[in-house]
Structures are given as C-alpha cells and as structure tokens.
Amino acid sequence: MGDQLPGSLLPRRRRRCKSDPVDAENAARAVLAGEATAIRKDRRGFAGELRLLVLTRRSAVKARTQASNQIKAFLLDAGDEVGARLRPLRKAAFGRACAALEPDNAVHRAIATLGRRCLALNTEARELEKQMIALLSAHAPELLARHGVGPMTAAQLLVTAGGKPATAARRRRARRNVRRQPDRGILRQDQPPPAQSRR
Image (cartoon, rainbow, N blue to C red; front, side, top):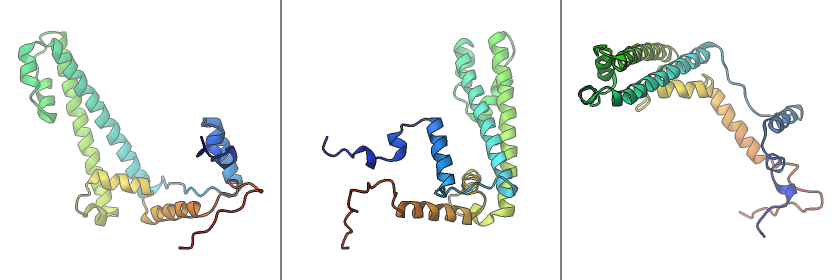
C-alpha cells in the first residue's frame, strides 16, 4: 500500500515485534542512553500505606464477589422455595439470609458457609475503607472534600500519582518533553527534515 511507512520510519518496538526480552532490552538501552524519563513511584510513607490498603480491599471485594456468584450457582440446586426467597435479596441482606439457612443438606450447608464468608469479607472491606478514609483525612483532606470524589477514587488517584501531586505534574511534563523531542532514529541520513509549518 502507498501509505505504508518504510521500515526505517517505524517505531523500534514495532519493527522488532513485541516480546518481554525485546522490551527489557529496549528499556535497558534507554536507561544507558539517558533517554528514560520514567519516574519511580514512591512506595513508602503515606502513598505506600494507602496502596497496601487499596490492594487488600480490592482482593476482599473480589473474593466476596466470587463467593456471591458461587452461592447464586448453588441456588439452582437448592430448591425453588429457597431460590425464590434468596434471589431478590441484595448485598448484606443476601449474605445474612444465606448464612442463616438451615443446613438440611449439603447444598444448604455450602450456601450457609459461603454466606458467612460474604459477611466476613464485607466487614473486612468496610474496615479497610475506614482506614483509608482516616489516612486521606489526615494527608489529603482537600481531595476528599471535592465534590464527586469518594474515598476509593481519592485513594486510587493518590496511589497512581505516588502520593504527591508534584509527582503527577513531573510525569506529565516528562511525557510532554518526550513528545516534543524528535526521535533521532526516525529519519535516515539521506532524507531531508520535514517541512516546518508556517503557522
């Protein structure tokens, strides 16, 4: 096709295909050449504590969802009466009703066990969220007070930024500088530089 770029104009990653060894080699070459502009995230202090709480709560919520889905699958074998009573319930009420189910048979015992697991994981997720709110109130109250920003959103923003707004600003500046600097390997020696716009 006429609009295809020659091989020398393709980015290095596309020319050499994507693979973990190639990506690792390219990253090492960028560091040795001084072209790497990535800023390492701060995993200590407030941001590190918040990151651990976010990850722990995420795993608790994931496990709670898995237990709830397993209960819903078991309800197919629990009988029409039990299914009709439990299916309309949501969240904590669903978990409490499952945990209180009489263990008449193996299916009911399994559903009751999973119901207790859902309740325990729900309590764990709430406790972790309280700890996150306490950290955010102490270190970033202005972010938590913004309209539409809940504790989970605020925590994820600060974890992504490394806990410091200046870090996010530095990352943005670094990305802009990389975009502005032309890649010396893109143009060949026998090709003229691109024409500059008059605007």
